[in-house]
Image (tube, rainbow, N blue to C red):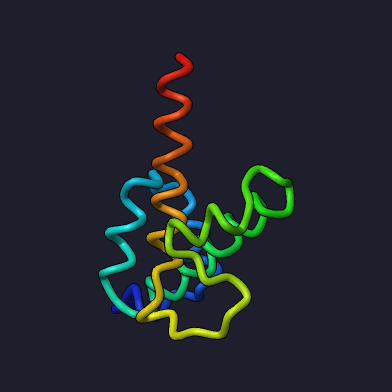
Length: 97
């Protein structure tokens, strides 16, 4: 019987894209494979926001971002930085409503 560990990272990324942002942070704790996929998604999300000028690198560093640095994805806090950034945006949007 196939297991989750046999799924390609691209397929996991597609599945995880349907998971609410709040839950992705916890999914990263399931296993190293899931953390790796979610790390890639988080870094991409943050890089897009940086490129679009929606935030600055100094803001991300406050959230734990170490973009551009080579680091151990099992020990870094890029996923936490993306989660904290999402929370700050979510709170700002809630205040405007």
